[in-house]
Image (cartoon, rainbow, N blue to C red):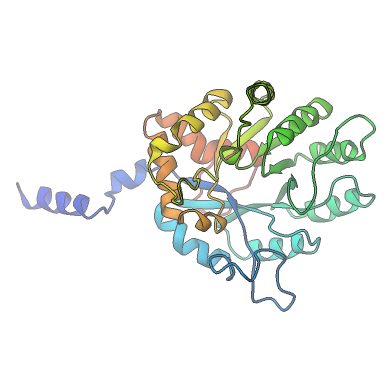
Amino acid sequence: MNRRSFLGAAVSGLGVASNNEAADRIPIIDTHIHLFDTNRPQGVPWPEKSSAVLYRPALPERYRKIAVPLGVVGAIEIEASPWLEDNQWVLDIAAKDPIVVGTVGNIELGKPDFAKHLERFHRNPLFRGIRSGNLWGRKVGPIDSGDPAVRDLKLLSSAGLTLDVANPDPELVAAVVRITDAVPDLRVIVDHLPQLQVPNAAEAAQVYRSYLRELGRRPQVFVKLSQIFRHVGGQVPRDLRVYRANLDEIFSTFGEDRVLYGSDWPNCDLWREYPDVLALVQEYFAGKSRAANEKYFWKNSVRAYRWTKRDSSQPTA
């Protein structure tokens, strides 16, 4: 072995990418992180002070140190507060760091001042949509032509923004079918679908899967393969075999064009730390084509959120 070959082998053995390897690496857009500052004078509504794992500042600088060495080049911030003015707080924080390519805020559907608040926050191009669903004591209720939420969802759609729906259960999946019936042009993103507990009763499970298959036929509906880890026997296994069947069902339903990478940082630390979160889905997608990997790790995020590149490290659609 000559000196050049020896040095190349040594670098590879240390896990340092060569120029060719770096060029071949797929960039990652993380579509689900939370930002908050527990040191603010007004505090935060989440996480609770009792959470030894989560109760400390979660800001872009801390996220960068964890995610950038793993190949992450951008992230979408998802609201972690029901306080209206925290939409502006997040936008101000995001403006200072180009790793944040978009934010998804919190404006309650069906309220008389929804349009005013949407217009205000949408003036900032980083604002990419809102989040609703099973959080903050709210639910997306029955959607029909008389529901004031439909009026607001149509405003969201006409602005080219998205609706993230959170903490899914079978009722929320059924609600997304009704939402997309009422507002067919609205892009909807189902967060944390792998965490949904399929009903044990056979009939209820069949009804749930019929709604899921219907969403699978709707090209405007995306899902995040996030919150994949689960507690099993008091442990949180890292073994992909524990989760593969669930991931396979979701992937086969929605296909490679409508799945997104989301870490749920720092909330993911309640299960396993960020490197394990990313490594698990990289292992899962290792058996799929490069095109499928590119779609999952960044290309689908552009279609779903229509974010704008802010840094030279970020890919161009």
